[in-house]
Amino acid sequence: MQYTPLEDIPKVCQQSLRDGFRSGKTKAVAFRKEQLKQMGYMVQENKDAFLETLKSDLGRPYLESEVFELIPAINDIRTIHDNLHKWAKTESAPFQFAAASMHPKIRKEPKGTVLIIVPFNAPVFLGLTPLMAAVAAGNTAVIKPSENAPATNTLLAKLIPKYLDPDVVQVVLGAAEETTKLLELQWDHSGHKVGRIVAAAAAKHLTPHTLEVTRRGVGKSPIIIDPKSDIRLAARRTWWGKLVNAGQICITPDYVLVPREVQDMFIKEIKLAHAEFFPEGPKKSDSFGRIVTLHHTQRIAGLLKETKGDVIIGGEVDIDKRYIAPTLVNNASPDEPLMKEEIFGPVLPVIPVKDVDEAIAFVNARDHPLALYVFSQDAKVKAKIADNTQSGAYAVNEPVSHVATYGLPFGGTGPSGSGQLRGKYGFDTFTHLRGSVDQPGWYEYLNSDWESDD
Image 1 (cartoon, rainbow, N blue to C red):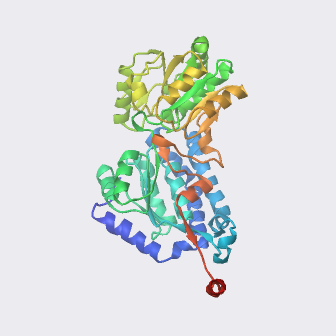
Image 2 (cartoon, rainbow, N blue to C red; image 1 turned 90 degrees about the vertical axis):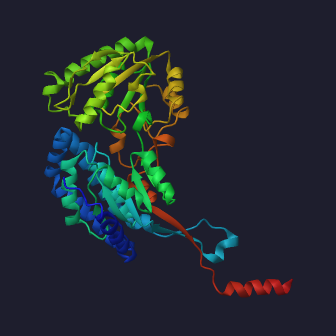
Image 3 (cartoon, rainbow, N blue to C red; image 1 turned 30 degrees about the vertical axis):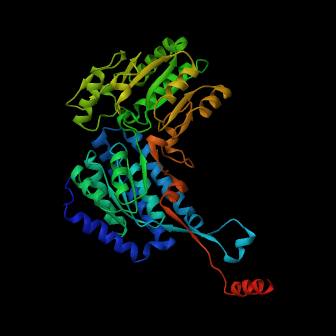
């Protein structure tokens, strides 16, 4: 993967895009819709190529990539395209008699030139989701893919100039040095997963930013098990959700809080599910991926070595093949590295608790997670957990899948992120709501008449 020369970044990416924005072409909704249509064609016409590059970068099964990256991206593009005229319309402000003569309105205007920095774990979906929102809102954009997904990013860098207007979208390839150079520049909006770095850089220019954060233990997404729930269902869906993309999803279940009274049953059911999912073992399975880099493989292996819990399933590591076996760690300590650091791999700690109340207290003692999962068939228990916790998303009896569900916002809260994406939520994120009034000339004479009466 050939990196973008540092000296070209300010000129090619900011100057050309700012000129493109100032030209006014992105203000036309018809132009934006054409760009969205081209983005959809880019994914559809190159589906097989994307599946191959995702397989190369992440060892991910084709079906998994299609279901969690390509199909949601195409569906979102279609939804935004079909609704854009309605979303972009100027709106009248709520009626107030005293201000009625000024015809107050809310204009939907683009913010300008935005920066999108993409993580490696879903390089198509997490790259195109903010990009389609930014373009739909009338912005120009630089997209900086992760260097840890080189095959996919090389393909994106080849296809984006072919399908999209270069005055509207530019791609920068590189690693830390190129990212640092990008963050030195002034942007009208930025989105990035390594939150604190971006927030600090954005603060220098008072740049609004949209963040999705899971690093360093922030935003670790828990599962709470109701002891009266269907334990077999909870175990199977928990294990499936943990192993999608080999655990390399920002919303993957990070740990399970299970009441002691059903802990043994839960472990037993996960063992049964594991045997069913991988009859010949996960290493030989075509449905289990690999860790993105050797560095990340070594990092996860290091966390496993330091665990104080009992490795019930898995534990095998093959650094050279970037393989970490699906691993279940029972009775993990809340203070060990597995619970303090980002896992981002197929390792699931199980922490016993007395009951649901203790599980709620455990979650609330930590930063708000990006997602909170609950397994329960009891409406009162589900409502109790939802009402007494905070998280970016809340899902019952189904981990992970909410990210691909149309109509829902995607984003964190507090330390786990800011801003939202998907559909109209993404359009609103990249849109400036500009208040406007238009006072008629006759109002001056009306004022004069009132003053003369006094």
